[in-house]
Length: 198
Image 1 (spheres, helix red, strand yellow):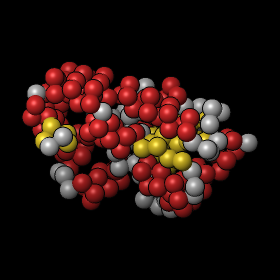
Image 2 (cartoon, rainbow, N blue to C red; image 1 turned 90 degrees about the vertical axis):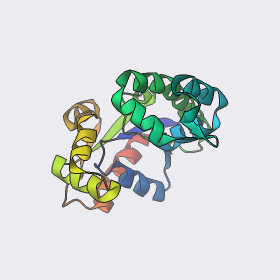
Image 3 (cartoon, rainbow, N blue to C red; image 1 turned 180 degrees about the vertical axis):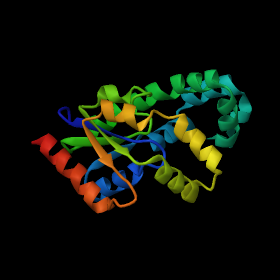
Image 4 (tube, rainbow, N blue to C red; image 1 turned 135 degrees about the vertical axis):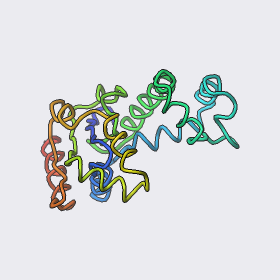
């Protein structure tokens, strides 16, 4: 649908953004996960695969599927490599989101992305909702979910845009602390989205 509006849904690791996205999906909204889209593109787009192999070598793929551990270890110690990888993948996700919105029969499409601003996807958005949470709460959630060390969780949080910066750039800020109920937060976002459509 050409007139479909795109709303960004962002938040750092452990903020609860994906949980809110799941709630909105259950409410019938079209939700586009940029992370899942990037994985699909990386494993299915032959031109993207060719460029990634040129960047990391043939070990980057195993049986046609990206070796995320191998690539992850390389980009973790080399930010220039990460930038080059992003330059390959982000424009394809950008185009893929535009196609998704065009094909949607809904007036609104939500794009869930932890790096909405960094990836350039925010340029396509008519409004942005961000989910924030206290750092300790985020660390706790990440430790429970990902089975990593506290130091690794803190490092991941520090490598992302701060809640303060996200909030400044967003149309609606949702605080998902320990006392928050997802159903109530989801209703708040849902109300904002329905008002946005008018």
